[in-house]
Image 1 (cartoon, rainbow, N blue to C red):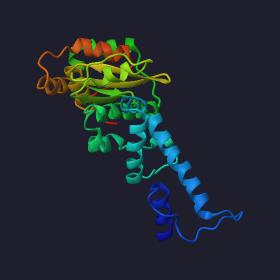
Image 2: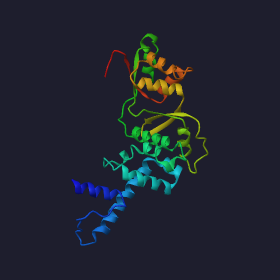
Image 3: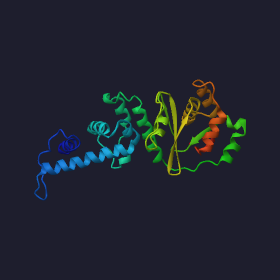
Image 4: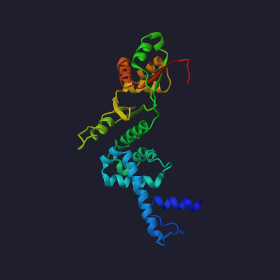
Length: 256
């Protein structure tokens, strides 16, 4: 076990020497073979991070991103062979990575891109028909106590920066100008094979968050109004219906 730990540590840190006792089957120099293998492993992990965080990579440039990724890899070995899973804590690392402090919105952009990966790999679910949703919600007495069940891919992010605008600006080449210092909330939802990234207001974020936590509609509205007095319930519900985010509406007494 100790030798395995030493091998893994040396594999991810170029500063460490080749582990002792390695033998090459074809008689080649073990240190040279190990160096090649280590380079391939590190390159594949950096590429995985770049694939999972393409906008982060664009924002800081290739050289800076590779240097930042090198440091992260030494601290966070992969726990799964699925490379889309790698880098789950990258945003938290970026937030405390001093050289990235000059791009204060970088960590939240990474959080957005992580949620995009999660939404893309979430379970499938059949959305509730718009007609059925409207029918159920048309009864005020019933609607007040309804609990919402959202599509498994739905994700929310609240940021003091314009994360959706920054992300959207980098979906074309060359990126368009953006103003980062405007607070923005994001809703991510997979529709078919594509993950939609939508900007939502504070009221919508507060209400959907409360509904995600299992609060019935009336209670969720009361909680949301504490954060946003101009809550527009009709507009929020219309958006959720239009984007097929709701998969079920349950009476409050029903538990899953």
